Length: 178
Image 1 (tube, rainbow, N blue to C red):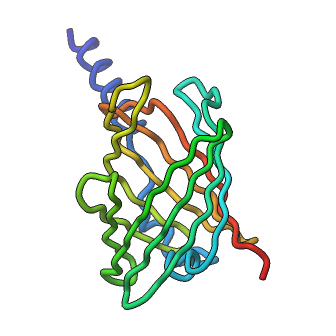
Image 2 (image 1 turned 120 degrees about the vertical axis):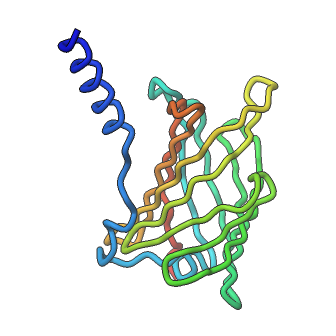
């Protein structure tokens, strides 16, 4: 009996370690430093894809983003165009709380979202309801952005339901050459 209890405890420990993600504060001091107000002010372009749980690409899209920053408030007006011609729009409003924290809202996101930035990384988790096959399904979006040395930002978002990742979104942001 002791042997099976020990195996069960080890399995539980491995499961818990596997669920642990990175701590954004570990990126403090990394370069180049990402400040979303600086990066997203003005025009930004993005290209992305949505993959299901198996890794199969389900949708591809582009995003044109217009960002304005004033009085510690960043507004991101995002216009999506999907490969099948469908369009969508999301407007995020972020209010700077301090050097590392933002409070964000969007019309299709429940409540407000605390977001944090350290070094070259920005992170936020938020609930989002999406229509899938005619049904509205609520996901937890775990959103990580990483500023690259060439000025592009890579964004990886996992879509989770009951703690299980059912999809992933990958985006590449780029500032147009001025």
